[in-house]
Length: 203
Ligand code: ZN
Image (cartoon, rainbow, N blue to C red; front, side, top):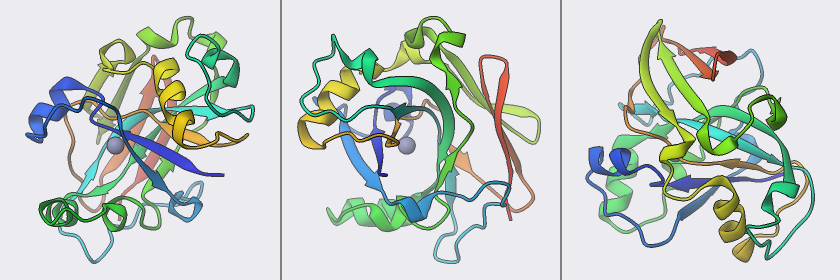
C-alpha cells in the first residue's frame, strides 16, 4: 500500500507557515515503513529539534482506479479515519529553502499515524466533518472538512491522474491551522466528530 499526502489544503494553515497558496494540490508520498505501529509511542527522531503534529482526515481506498472522475470518486472509499502527518519542521524548512524533496522530514519511520477507520455512512456528509486534535487534554487543532480547498472527491480525481489508487491505499487530506511542536510525554488524541480515533504518547 502507499500513503498519498496532500499539503496546503486549508487556507489558515497556509498562512501560518507563510506558504504560497497553490493553484493545484501539493502531493507527496510516505512509504509503508513510516506507519507508526499500533499501540507504540512516537519517538521524536534524533535528527530533529522541532517535530510538529499535523492532524488530518484520512480516506481508505477500496477499489483500484486511475483517472477517476470526481462524480464517481465516492465509489472508491467507504471508510474515513484520522491520523497525524508528523513533520520534522526544522529539516523540512532547510530542504524547502534549497528546493530539495521533503521526504526526510515527512516520510521517516513512525511519521504516519493511522487511527482506526470508521464507515463513512456513520457521519453523513464527508464534506462537513468536524475533527480535532487534543494535546494533553487541550484542543490544539480543530476544523471541518468544509474548510478544505479541495474536497475529498476532488482530491481523488486529482491524485488518480498521477498515481493509480489501489485497495488499501490511504490519503492524508491535509492539515488545518494549529500545527505545533511535540515534546516528550505529550499525549495526542484525535477525534472525528465525537468519536476518539487514536491516542498516542510521545517519547
Ligand atoms: Zn500534512
